[in-house]
Length: 170
Image (cartoon, rainbow, N blue to C red; front, top):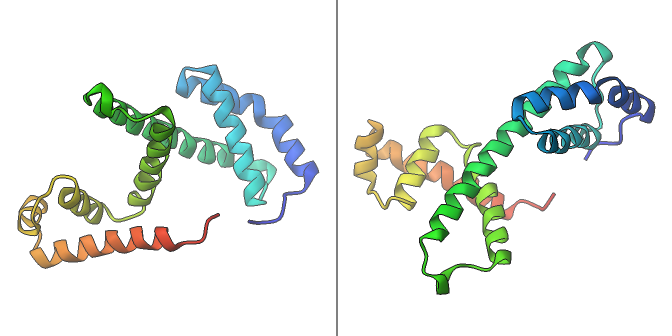
């Protein structure tokens, strides 16, 4: 983690742009509560990065960070909805506890983030293999590539997963 940004620069960035950023997020999200949360998270990212943008680039910098957080929020909500739909199909005796659901959802979000760092064909090949149970030959046909390419794609995705498993915690 980088050192903290200069307090005066951060205070100026916040006082000059916080209201604007919340308004921009409120328009994008249609929700003042989510806008406030993401505005907070935007400034938190700046604090943890240790870099305050130059004044002439402030809004562009804030917008870039906030936009990424909006994408993350929508992706998380899609994952959560899909998970809740899946567990709604379970018999009552097999429905996980609230704690187990929260832990599973966090794991699913982390896996999704990890897989979005992998090239698209590698991600697709791994998911088709592991979730759909497709053979390498069927995956190759679907992706219109060779079987050896599928092997390389899956190896790439699995290496990324293994690297994340053995990476030190932040």
